[in-house]
Image (tube, rainbow, N blue to C red; front, side):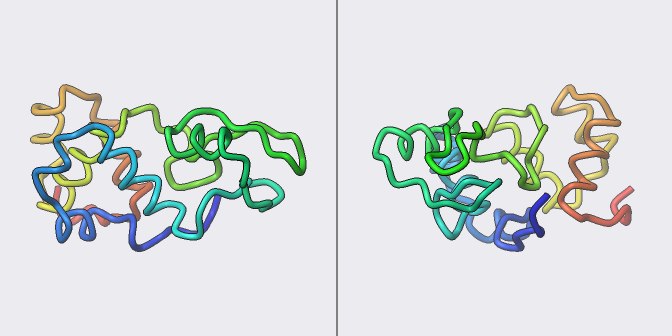
Length: 132
């Protein structure tokens, strides 16, 4: 897994939050730009993705095939979001709740999600347990 990108954090989201985040495409683009500030690269061999079709797929969050090592990946692969199944808008919502220091029990009620999953997300974002 890559080092945590501090520009992708609940606090950063809170400072940038606007009505545009109601748009699912904006949410996806914001997340991918934050976890890939260096642009589209293979997380395995670090080759830059330059093919127009593959770039479009990458920025849509779809699976991409690396022209260098031929491995398949998505924009979330080998990042802080690898294996997290929440869609982009839900992820933004969780991050906003975490930034506002809302207790997990309250987030669980609003998001209708399992408490263990929320603890996992909080851990992935490197947040403390102080808001419990």
